[in-house]
Length: 335
Image (cartoon, rainbow, N blue to C red; front, side, top):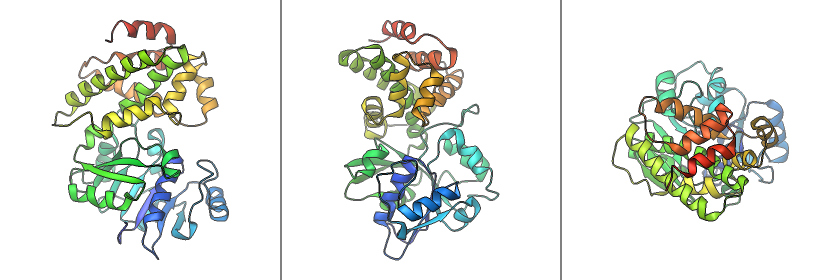
């Protein structure tokens, strides 16, 4: 149950909308959740109809518990916890209008991606650019939580990562409810990297589905993806972690197999013969793995970790290699 915190959600997509729905269910009577939507017409529509006009528009929101903003300075200055839920490719442009610092705020990233071309995680972005204290005032939302199922109030499990366990507990308490169970960890970097990697693996799973490979091969692919994820996160951030928990493996499984997975959908379309441009135009939503595949490839130049699945996806998406050819090469590299 939310306490006396003034909580803001920045973002107008499906995950942001689902988070707003959870928070409005949890907020104490008389309190409101602050919600930033960039376009005034989207705010007007939401206030009138109780729905997000573009995403999860079957979800009815309790607008009596929502204060709407389209001024980023204003919403941040009127909040002490700020949850960012915008695509990684747009976080810099979203933040351009904000002129202040976030050093006095608890910042929570619900963004499962890295800054494109700069190849940095959200933790480092908010720390370096907005003075967020990573030891005490930064959190990450991780785990297998598709927005569509959270909006339907289907039982889901969310992991809150923060290097301050008291901060993690504060955030978790605001989100936990009868259909959303929470756990905490101190692994902000491992959960962030795992969230990037699982999107790439889901594209690979989708490619294989589109090419006609069956469940037997998918099982082999994902078991190799788990090991690939472990190799990467243990190398770039070597701490004691259990990769088999829901924040890592659970998120990978749901993203690789679920009908709600944008990244899997992108992969299926590529496997079926769509061009990358045609697939992305038809989806009309951001698949984070598109950007993440390049970020991980560039990051791995420093480490030279064996990442055959990530490399196959990178070659298809960013090098224009044929999907069938890359998957046939991958078949001989995994066991």
